[in-house]
Every structure is written in structure tokens, then in C-alpha cells.
Image 1: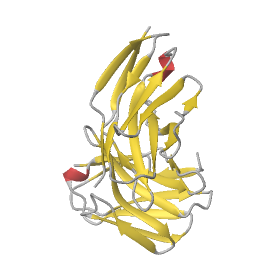
Image 2: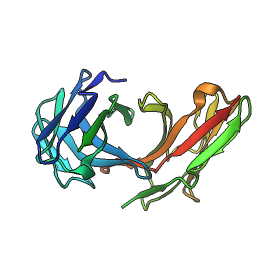
Image 3: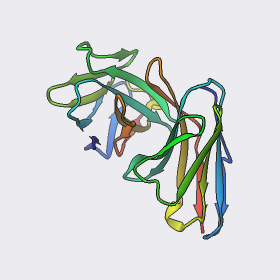
Image 4: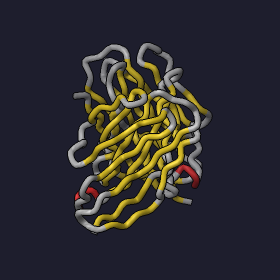
Length: 112
Length: 113
């Protein structure tokens, strides 16, 4: 499973507060991703990283920012959480040798 | 943008029977990868099977196999001898070089004992 750890596993927060979700990998993969999962939409890409300090936007990036200061860590920040950001968030890392994507266990975020 | 369509929001199968989940995709690329992921109630995303577009032979992993029809842009998953543990959401996904992974909306599979 590429040793991907997400924290926290669950979080409840209030509208307008900042939230940071953490992702840690142990396999030294270059590419890492943040997705959100919502009913009827599957998984949608928020942001991705192709190296330390190298990030780019996905299809649903508004309201989110990311940072990658080390190969193993990829952070997702909601600057000011809104109820529309209530979702399950997945971090993933890509094994470039076989194109497989490995996922963390997900974070259930509720914005009240 | 490439899109992935799973036209069956829900499917059910009797234990020990065979079920096929459908997936179609839209692309202008000739070289790409296709995947099926399983998401059980634990929420963990588990890779079931992977297909490279340049390979004509359909991928197989134990009871799981695919029917890859490149011209039709179709990538269905067949589960043989269904087991109770196969009950899950199944996501079809597509990725081409230089592009991101795109997922379908998912199919919820129920296995009846």
C-alpha cells in the first residue's frame, strides 16, 4: 500500500476555520495527490505534486492549497472551510514504475 | 478532458455467480492505462486490476478479469465466483501519460448470500 498515512482520520470543524490535512508516505514516490470523494462524483483531483515544492492544480482546486516541503509529506489546507468542503479526502502516491496509484485511508471532514 | 463513465450506479449478484461491471471512457490518446479500484466499507481504496492500452491481451487477477475493447473505449470488469467479500464500491479509472488519473462515479456491488 506504499505506506501512506493520512491524519486525522476524522475531523469536525466550523465554517470559516482553517484546516490542514496531512499525508505521509514511506516509499519515496515522486508524485502525490489529493482527491475528494463525493457521492455521484467518484474521486476528483484537488491538487497534485510532482516533487518537493512542485505542485499544480487539479479540477476542483478552489478553496484549497497544498505544500510539499519534503518528499514524504504532502499537506492539504483549507484556508477558510465551507460546508461545501464536507467530504472524504484521500491522499495518494503514484509508483512511476508501474503507474499504480496507492491510497491512504482517507479523512472524513465535516464542516458545520 | 478525458472522462470516465460508469453507467451502473448499483449492481447485485448472487454468491458464486458472475457479474460484469461496465466502464467507458473518452480519450484521443493512444497510450494510456486503465484501472479498477475496489472500495469496501472500510473506505480503503484497493487496486483490483490494471490494463495497459498497448496490450491486446486482457488483464486477469485470479477471479477478476477485464474485457478491454480499445476501439469501443470500453473497459468492463468481470468478477467470477462472487464472494461476500466482493461487496464494495468499484471505481473505473483512466490515466494517460502527462495527465491525471480520472475516475468514474462508481458502481456499488451487492453480493447476496
